[in-house]
Image (tube, rainbow, N blue to C red):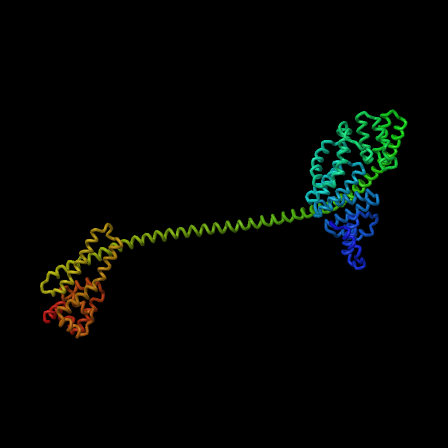
Length: 544
């Protein structure tokens, strides 16, 4: 479509329109055909082709489809010289400014709208539209179209005598003219007008072939000569303009003719041109005013209707919001009161629970304190008992130590037995030495040692039995033959080394001491009242 619009038009014309059944297809075809006709410079003044697109896209189309439809609809109105309707289309298209993505079509629309502004003598709007379009073309890389819009804006600035703005644009168009040579001829004509308007004295002297120039340039040259106070040259050039051309019907031609003949003293001709200018001006003002007001009125009418619709809609929304807010406030108050009552009840329950817990905690604390006090008392008693027990055990060990020392001095004891007794005495001496060195007599380590030594009595008794078995085997054999156990024989060996019955009982710390003695008497056949078991054992030892 953009590169080969003639081929696009040929393809579209070859499509059988009866095959286009859906409204979507018909709208698409109508928009593409209108686009192809416009790009091939075929002006149409009917909406037969575009109407399906207008009916479909303006209601259901995307922003880009609406934009294109409004643009080509406006172009058709321009072809029909219905400029107010065309302007209305372009204004609607401009409303899509924040939604469109088809930048090229929007730029084309700005240029076409600018043409309407120019026709209604709204030069500033014409310049603004073309400058905005040039920026869009520049973003798209369409520098040829950008140059065209800039030259239009440049020409309008020169026409409106805005030299400063014209100079700023001229710097850009001069740069672009180097890369777009086809724009140089058109730019040269505008720059010619620029020179005549702003520097006529030097510029007029550079013009050699005036006859080859177009009518618009000749009128600018006439203005240049008038500004230089050369009325005759101005009149000669003015009268050389073709009276059948289009420029003779323009305001510019008539007002310049008035000035030319007035400067040459031909007041009658000057008056004729001025009257023609007044009549044309009245017609143009009437037409321009009609164009401006009709578009403005339509636009205003639509805006008023939209405002009224919005206001009506806003009133409904506001009423709904107010009612909702009132209901919300009422519901909020009810909910607040409900929550407040619930919170108060919860607080009362929690306060009651807290007081109950505090009472329970106080009772528990008192109980704990009493238990701790009782525990301390028990611990103190335990420590006292432990100390007393320790002292008792140490006392017994000391007694045992003294007894064993006396026995170790008996010559009649076998050497093996004296050796066992000696080892026992050495251990207890080491134990007592440790007690002297220990800072705390009730220390755990010492307590464990004392307990160990007391428990080692059985090992001592067994060692003592084995010693007698080695030195007096017949004595031990005799006891074995009467069915005595090792423990019972070890018990009797304590008597054999010289301990008395009371000492043996204290040494062993056994409540069953008398029971064991009775059992041994039964096995050995000794009457309980016949003799002392210690005396009996020592006699038996001497016998063997």
